Length: 284
Ligand code: ZN
Image (cartoon, rainbow, N blue to C red; front, side, top):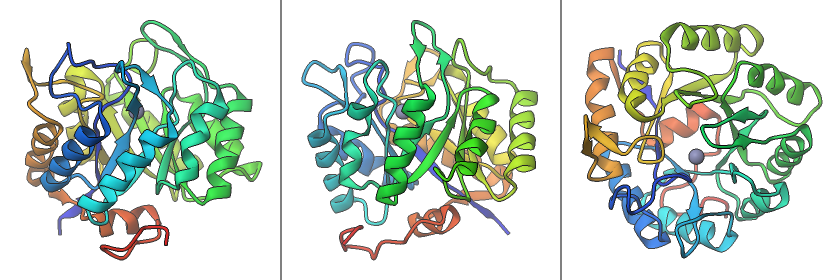
């Protein structure tokens, strides 16, 4: 029997600009349109960052709200996940969009180096964001950039700031963090299963590692992430035309691993989310 795979599309991120690829959606309207195409191609979670009018990363709650409203309208049942990444921004700012009650939000449970900066997540920041998500009933996706972030997740559970089962996302291939290596993924999966046996997980590869990591996740029963946030190419030196094209590449791999894209309702059920009635406001 084929096992459903939740495909997340990370449509925008903090890094790519229009000058890098015209396909990157930065205005809320184009973000909704790009998400809709990716949804039709098989994605069931939309991972959202917003930009300001100069394309700079932003935590503007109004922009997050506009994107969420558009996705709710055009992509029935699709799971909306806000990024709280906000590199360099204060935690209050990073958490501000959560008042709009996305289904999920990213939560990085520690600090790490990136290529050009330190991605700083002190306990104070992590606890604050986790507490907000708990209060609002938003399911965190634990972004794992380093092995310690798994144990930090257990620490949060023990202190009552996270509820089980958690969903973890292994981020592979960032300079300064975990490499895109199959033994590393095996270690991460084994450790997650050992300390949190009820957890679900996905994995993503940055840049040229995207499709390779999609394959590794599919082969291990994990979930997959793709999208222009992580990689802007569809093949060597060829820019992807859209987020939907990248989703399509991941979908095409599924049969080889006896997997198929999860419907939004299946994704919600796998993640233990409340399943919104199609066409109704998700948090009505
Ligand atoms: Zn992101």
